[in-house]
Length: 267
Figure (cartoon, rainbow, N blue to C red):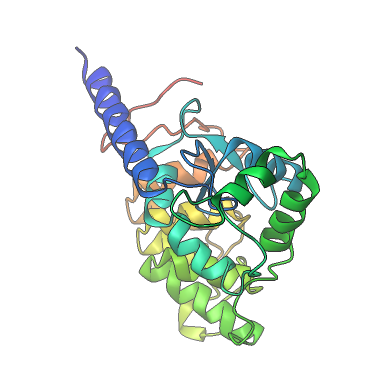
């Protein structure tokens, strides 16, 4: 077996292991509570059921990017972000003030039968309304967690450097700008994506890109995040950035998920 084949086999094993971990840690849909969900929102870090995934898709990819954890070939770094986030953590953020009238499917709760009736009653608009309020309007985040745009942008920048994924998502959900430029002059006009790339924080880079961070913004020295990563020999970071750049001449599905920077997988 060639080195390329061995690395591909190893990556596939890692992917399957992460998928199993994600499913084991998220036994119920993040939105309605149905058991054994098999769809993921790769930019929000949650696992949802088929019915809820359809509504997620209807919101547009700028809100939620849906993939099948069973059928789609999801990159390792994307799976790693999902494994680090997950329903419990994300719902602490997005369902902080969830309405008491919304009953999730839980076989151990008294409301399970009622919830099952909700599921099969055709009340699509009820599910749709809740999901839109949760992800588009952010109606259920902590209303007492009030921060200025400057504070949110600072949180986003520092969290990207530290690879604190939940804090990154929190800042975004509260209105932080993923393309903000640090107000700290010592940071040389860099964005959170610059900072994450320079610190070799792969999961921060992944999550920021999933949430529309620009890979083409230049810092005060005229360098993009990719150029900073290249200068530091952070080839996995380069690969992730390239995979989100439609104009990259070397764009691949994830050509460097192992340590061999010369390895490329075919489209």
